Length: 125
Image (tube, rainbow, N blue to C red):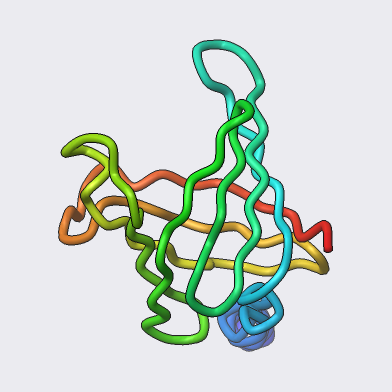
């Protein structure tokens, strides 16, 4: 019985120490793609980001946003030319995990704890 408890505690220790990769620095700059379902159809957004500006290309239109990095894995996005009140609200982005040329992120309106969404982006350049 003691051997079983020892084995259980040892395996729990190793599993508890496992952390997913978060190499966020490599995603501060570059060209990225993000796909999501919009009204039942797969829609793709391409965006180009440097440390302070992000340009999004979606359905033949482009939009520019400012970027303010909070830390290596979190930043605030705010549209530079909002077209309505909803677009004036800043969005908090958080990179949760990285894996090669992709990262999983969580996003939501700044100051709103509920209604966070998740997605995966791929670095293409």
